[in-house]
View (tube, rainbow, N blue to C red):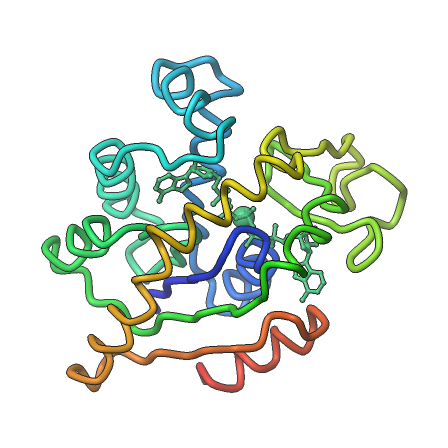
Length: 215
Ligand code: AP5
Ligand code: ZN
């Protein structure tokens, strides 16, 4: 199963990815998590990406496409994968198609901008795994600690309200065109499904809506 999760910052891509990757036994490929790992490790890629991410801007297509192409050839991707946060621009989507990657379904998680800003302020993350919580909607068992490791949770640098607004702007300008792009692609290709879910429902309901349409 090869899946793409499409949605605004904070729509719940990472949250739903946790369930979907377990259900289908496929790896989660989150370009955001990959870049944050590179920043934490202090690599050249991390240094380059940090300035873009801190401002809510996209990292260049060239870098991201190289990163994803390399990742999807690894052995754990043989039975499929879930792309979380990629593609995010039309050139990225074209690069995926040009590489001959046959996607089974694009899942759009639809959430209005007003809801997003509130969600981001309550988000807490376990940096090493990318696991995501919310202080109200999805609290960890012990406050500020990851459920599986007990390690501390952090707030992402780009979750400050002013950066969230910039990320939303970038989403509408550069990523939202992929909604039409993939709807048109699905209309022409029976093997590609386009699934749209209301992401303002509670987390478990969003999950069952997605699974219901995928199975
Ligand atoms: P990335 O890490 O991909 O961030 P994003 O797309 O902005 O998305 P988020 O991770 O913020 O949100 P999410 O949809 O995963 O929501 P979550 O599940 O956490 O990218 C970060 C940066 O990296 C970019 O700005 C860019 O600079 C760079 N980058 C990454 N990929 C790139 C690419 N392809 N090209 C160029 N640059 C790239 O949920 C959010 C919160 O809401 C959580 O607290 C969660 O618990 C809560 N929540 C989730 N679902 C629900 C629900 N149904 N009800 C109530 N609360 C919910
Ligand atoms: Zn995410």
